Amino acid sequence: MSTPDVSVVVVVHNAMPDLTRCLNSLVRQSIGRHRLEIIAVDDGSTDTSGRELDWFARLYPETVRVIHQPYSGGGLGAPSNRALEQATGRYVFFVGATDHLGREALERLVTAADAYGSDVVLGRVVGLDGRHIDQSVFAGNEIQIGLFDSALPWSLSNTKLFRRSLIERHRLRFPEDLVVAGDQPFTFEACLRAGRISVLADYEFYYATRRVRNGQQAGHLDRLRSVESIMNVVARLVEPGKERDHVLLRHFSWEVARLVEDDFLRLDRPVQEEVVAGIRTLADRYLTDHIRAQLEIEARLRISTAQRGTVEDVIAVIRQDAEHGVPPTIIDGVRWYAGYPGFRDPRLAMPDEWFDVSECAADWLARLEAIVATWNTCPDGERALTVIARTPRRDLIELASGPIGLTAGDIVGTTLETNRDKGGTNLRVQFRIGPFLEGVPAGGRLYPIRSQLTAFGSVGSAPLRAPIRPPVSRLMARRGARFYVVTPTVNHRGQFVIAITPVTPRRVIQRLRRKRP
Image (cartoon, rainbow, N blue to C red; front, side, top):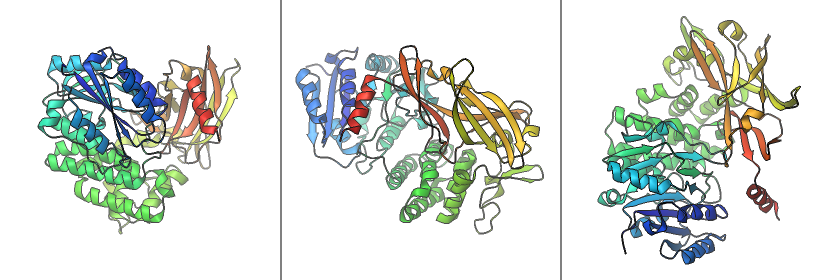
């Protein structure tokens, strides 16, 4: 029997009904089943996932191999490693059991890897069901990119094509003690060891859904242990300096910052204490001045307060955004500072430059918060969402040298009114629904709302926060023969977003199943 080109690894735990779509996307790959081996590990599923895997193995016995094992605890590590021990393909590709591939994905990836001599190939990943996938690394096709001079550190999932000889030469395996993000240490080291890493951005290779492996979202302590693990791996393999900082910036900006987002306020006190202690350790160990200066103001001050202060200090900084709104601006000479709790507090001894927003004054001015959102009907009968945003700055109109508005991706809202009262400045903007319904992919689309203005010779922009979830209902909208659910909501970062979800028979069936007693 000839060596397969690709060993596809699928780790499965209670993945029905999405698992069926995943498996169909694999056996129908244009590369042909004779060039594949699919190794599916049933990690203690209690739904019908195991039976579905066995069914596909009976249908395609030369291609699909199933391993059943007791539940390993929720992480990818143990089942992925077991599959790697049995893989025989020239390349290995990992697929989430609730995700699926474009039909030509594996053929394109293998062809590129063979043509370029690549050890790792990234194909464009797109998110479904509102899942955000950073697209920075997919700006264009690249025969070779570097780990330390590209956006690759922002794309460290294992959804890539890996040369198996690279994996075996360096005995690369997944850590087995991580419930979440256990693929990142593996992917980072593979990219570090790779002779060539290529990017293919001209095709939608991988469709990623919101993934819950163990029946619930990973908690703060699981995520803390995960980021500790990956940062320690990076530090072990990369000497201190700009290269290490380039990678660790991603982890402070994303994983560490997520630990002190608005939902931190709802944690039990012992968990808050442990999270703050963990962040303090990571910051003392790895947070250089170079990294800190590149963090967004919210992340920089929340992480820095955890490093220097107490849980109560961290809560005060988070509450400023989550409950009180845009903080005041402290002007000292020609410098502007964000008036967060802790500014010039001798007990915390945080330098002024950590609060300094002078170099991004236009962005700072653009920080608004949504206070009202309502549905209304335009004169031509089209439905529209009207949003009222507010800032405590009464001088916003004078400082802005042009229109002040809101955008949703590429969609620009119509500014109906800008006015000032005793408490600040209000902005009323209308978004017609029609543009949101154009070209919506099967998995839906998420539109983060941003405020935008011009001041001090530059364009400023900031996410529109919503300290309180806007009391506005979902809307059913129609475009041609298709229906969509339009949901104004607030994401985990406290930012106002509009979610567009196609109404399909499959979604209706899933909702009915969830409601069934």
